Length: 247
Length: 258
Image 1 (tube, each protein chain N blue to C red):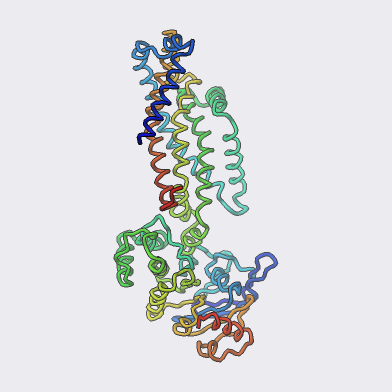
Image 2: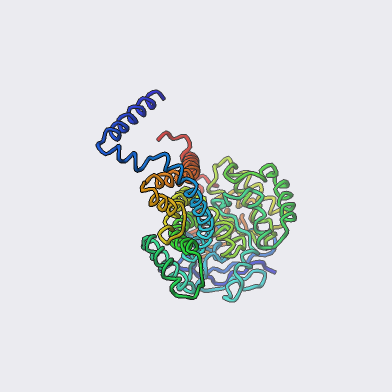
């Protein structure tokens, strides 16, 4: 059974159509990577799935529950999905441990000691144990993004959305973040991520989806999309990426 | 250091000489700086200042609550909240516009005249007037702070499943307040002296006590006593404001000399 079903989702900002009928399903434990140029609708698609943007038309189902139903509790729906942002978006006035445990304490109503114990354990497992009592601005970009990832997975979300999570990082910090994503994949997280890291996409993705102009142009295994793309737009995009040295 | 010292001494000597050599100085000294009158009026003025301090404490807490409420109301989105938003906007427009003195008269003499409140001490009406006016100012300062918090912080909080209210309380307001701490402290300093205005309602605070002592002694020295006491009360907060502002400025522009 699929974790996520996006059905014919449309979204426009004024006259500008950003999502032009998106259909996408993601199975349990599947890792799907969205590629495409800036403005192709990748980020907006992620934001609509997490109900940060309202869809104009279409449906989004999470494990069978229609999140676009107007009667649905949107806060509860968002709590079922983990999100990691390009610019980390950690809360600068809260210590790392409080960032990480906020949702567990305030949304899932875990006791403070329970949440702290779990948060500390998770941070230690992922090599951030020493940073638990620090404020985010004392951490490197890579560390901050890893904390943001821990924050997102802390409450075992049914789906994890990663939006260009390495784009704001210095090149030498990208590796540690991607290592953490590998760990999550190996733990069986269901993930949908937008990225420009083509070699990483090839490595972790079960499926790559190429978007252009708010539509899904082509999708398939990493080998199909990256080695033998069929659609001329995919070929042109990959050609540009190659010349940019990203592949 | 030496330059600062020399220039300070020269400045004080020049200004001091200018005042002391003025034709009316002897009269001014007698009616404003009379040591005997100062000592005689000191206890009653100090007792009056205690009233001001009580008013200040109650008002500061009330302003924090009402000001935050107004700021939150003004930041509500969505058509459903239009009436609340409009109400808060009208309120802040109104009370930032009306001089505090007029608010004091309206509240202090107008509300009791309605005859529904029983016998309420004038000090309390004075406090209410100060709270009404200052809440409007504080609400605007807080709103500016909240709007300065980057929208991505809200998005991150809501993505975790936090409600709108939780997002405001845990993420937006704490960060927003931090951004406007110097402005808030400055308003607090300004409120410290404005509590002296409740004397116009007849409350026997430091200003009123000084007025009474002045009338009894035919001498203005009690006002100087009251003024010095107000300054003494405000100084710690003023210095603290300077310190906090300087510290924030240092954090904002590390290493800059300008």
